[in-house]
Image: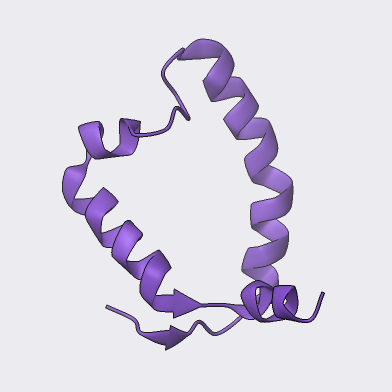
Length: 69
């Protein structure tokens, strides 16, 4: 488990903001329960708990930039 600052990756940030949008839109049009809040805990509870703890215990570059706005 990571605690503290997440190391930024420009390559991953660009990929997440460009390719994911189309894939998510396609999946949402096919599967009605896709991207609904709480569904991740139903399908993969171990991963959902890990992700929730990870998000609360680590911070990234965007979180730091929000403080200065």
